[in-house]
Image (cartoon, rainbow, N blue to C red; front, top):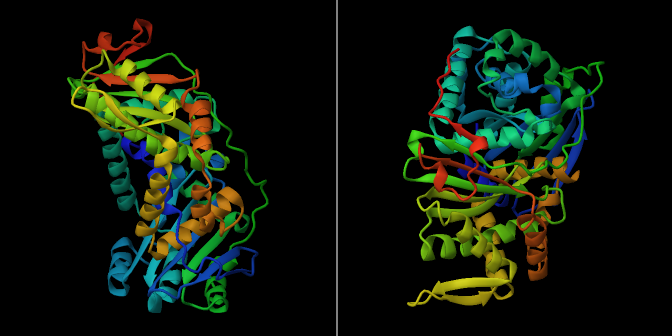
Amino acid sequence: MKKIIALVLFSAFLFSAAFCQQNENQQASAFLANGVPVYYKQNTTNAIDVVRVNISGGIFYYSPELAGIENATLSMCLKGSKTMNYQTLQQFCYQTSSSFGNGSGDLNGHLRIVSISKNLSDSIKVLADCFLNPGFDKGEYEKMMTEYLQSIQATLNDPMSLLTYQLQNIINAGHVSQTSVAVTPESIENITLENIKAFHKTLLDSRRLSIFAYTSMPLDQLVEELNQNLGTVKAQTSPLKTGEITPVTVNFPPLVLTHPSAANAGYVLRTYAAPSIKDKDYWAFQLANAIYSKIMFNVIRTKHGVCYTPQAGDFGELANVGVELLYSCTNYEDCVAAMAEARNLMAQGKFITGIKSNGDYKFSTIEKQLAAFKYSAINSIYGSQQTSASVVNRMAAGLFYYNDISAFSRQEDWIMSVTAKDIQRVFAKYVLAEQDFWAAAVGPGEEMRLPFYQNEEFEELSGETISQ
């Protein structure tokens, strides 16, 4: 489960996870003996190497009833192999200054190594052993499931996380994105050790594998090392499962939840369609969010005192959804009007630089302020992207989204090419769209203070309890 704060900051993550100028063109590729592609970039800047083993297919390989099964399976791979238990694996990581990790997304899952250069060869052998021959220790499985249960319970107990979960369920119903990459309250009973073992077999398919490496190890040596293990994975005969993640529809009656923890300071969201990361409008939309968030702050918080933190963002990557968020909202009666005021000023191309003593705004224009937002975004990107892991992540993301491992090296150009007219156009197209979806989590008895409250849509939730 994802908390809405993390979701609305997705654009910030994308900025920070996808940019680095250094040596982007010094890269090469090769193939293992079984045809698995290896995308390589030589590490000439530090002694920390990263290798990422990617498994394509993502949510097309499991249903909503098995949501989170891929992530659970990959997590179990990192709990030890048939020849190395979890404790021994931890000792290896400590002794070699290495670490292993995993992740799952809509399009793919992955295992990764972060290792000092001199120990990369040993780390590759260990990770490959864990991936190809996981131990599936029952005790480690039970610990993992306890962690999942605790995470789900925390979501059910937190009004904002619960609201986000309910909102996404409504938006994604009947869409491929209905399948979550995370374990859900509905799927957790199906994340059995037997199902994990069965799902693991589907991952061992050379057609689905690819490898991304940022290392000082020469490419030919890396290929030789990988051929000893991952190069032995055979191609399965079943048809590959692929598909397109299309835009979602965001046009539903308001959703209002009540929760004791939201009393006196709740959460209000307005969601709407947003451009996919593959869309030409995506980067203009990200800059528009940054500008609009500043306007929202001056209008909604500073002038009207509606909430503690107003912010514009998005979540979804491919089936993307835009969001206006009022965090810790106390003035429900004026929240819709204040948001409309901020939206109207943004639509006029106005930018607020301050508020006069008489309450009037000090105005500039978006055109005059745009360059500062561009440079701020680029500085933020560059300052946070000096790690080996970021290089590998950019290579992988470039291939997934643009079929070009060097695509994100051009991100600075994409940002700098955005004009004020682009900002106004995408804002009008997406944020000002008539189709939207309002949602709120408030304290019991506070729901009627919301201007968009509709009794027939009202649902009271006080926090559920789940058990395994």
